[in-house]
Image (cartoon, rainbow, N blue to C red):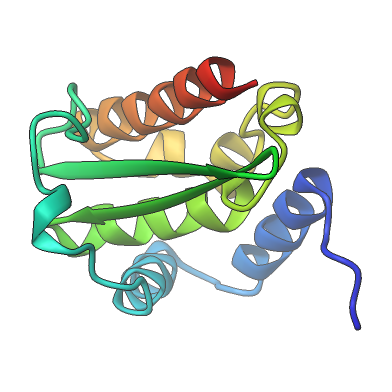
Length: 140
């Protein structure tokens, strides 16, 4: 059985994955494809309790802790935002909360998301990261 990658290893892999694309149109397509693979969040979680404030799109992030492992489910009504969430869950879901806290999302700048996303999407992405970190602190 394969050993689960660390958060750092997962971020490096994601950065390498994006380096294969020559232009931003292809990178956006890849982000959208990642979002399409994200499991739908049951309607019962589409509530204000799980809504991420600071996103233009509707974003819901649901934490579940089991044996000191924090798992996330999430959803959005925007295809690009769903892809951004899928990236964050790939990095931070199914992790020890302390590992989440000690590993900021370096991939955001290295992939170029901070430069190529609209300001409102960048703010939303940062709001999602802050919410993940908030949950990690709460559950650690």
